[in-house]
Amino acid sequence: MIRAFGPGRVNLIGEHTDYNGGLALPFAIDRGVTVEAEPLAGGEIRAEALDLGESDSFAAAAPQPADGWRAFVRGTVAELRAAGFDISGTRLAFSGDVPQGSGLSSSAALEAALCLALLAVAGAEEPDRTELAELCSRVENDWVGAETGLLDQLASLQCSAGAALRIDFATLELRPVPLDLGDWRLVTLESGAQHTHAESGYNERRAECRAACAALGVEHLGAADPEAADRLPEPLRRRARHVLSEDERVDAMVAALRSGDLAAAGLLLDASHASLRDDYEASVAEVEATVVALMQAGAAGARMVGGGFGGSVLALLPPGVEPPSGSVAVTPGAPARLL
Image (cartoon, rainbow, N blue to C red; front, side, top):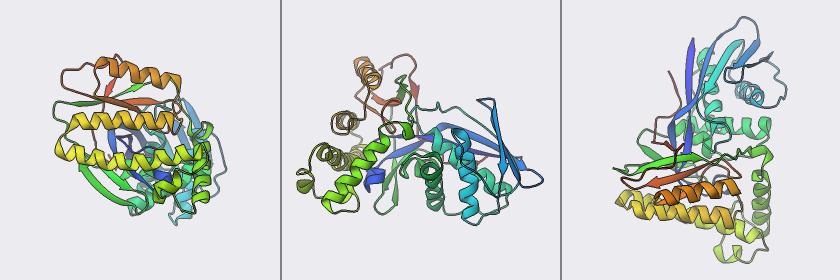
């Protein structure tokens, strides 16, 4: 029996920048998805979502489109086979402790764990993890229908314990950044509004960013000239302003962490949230109420995490501050792995 674990992630800062060729600073967490896998005679994949009490079966050689969690399993098998891996009959079962729709990337956790488990059953050598993240992203884009970038997949596969990961999406340069908070804490609190990338405003924002790039004549917004971007029509001007200012905040956060200036880190979380709310228009009433609750409890800063339009809020708490009920402490954990 093979067991593989894919962690969820928290993105400390750098939201909606991945598909815009910008910067982000995520870290893996200790919650995620565990996949159990074993060989199965014949060429059939049999998968069971233990948390849902649902199952699926299909021919490994010819996965067909499906909805929900089945799209992730079928897409992963199809993309691994398309990449040249001999994925054949396998029994899969998975469960997780990352709430779906929380903005903590249960999707990428599932994709990463499925990949590692299927490769291990096939006796295949693990490929370069950045290439594997790109494969997982194709599953999300082409099989699930969510136009996500690489942030979630790279975080699940490439982060390291005790550190965040500075990702430059224009070059795919990866740089660990120690996340030593001392007596300070990072917590997440669910807003109560579930988000689903493929059904939310996420894809609409991606289309707006493509339109802004076309108007500016650049490949991605991270490469745009700020003065030219400021002359775009609305709402493209505000979308571009968010991306460019968020990139600046990522490197400011790296500097704050390296100098131990956690009060400045909290202010950067606040600024990121304001930009996501006002310039990117990715917030909802439940998220705003959650931010207010965390700030009233004494947080040094708080912001939505994930694609927005619901999900969780991340907050940085000074020593001695008790968060609202339901908050969960998050610390940087290890990447996806075989157990």
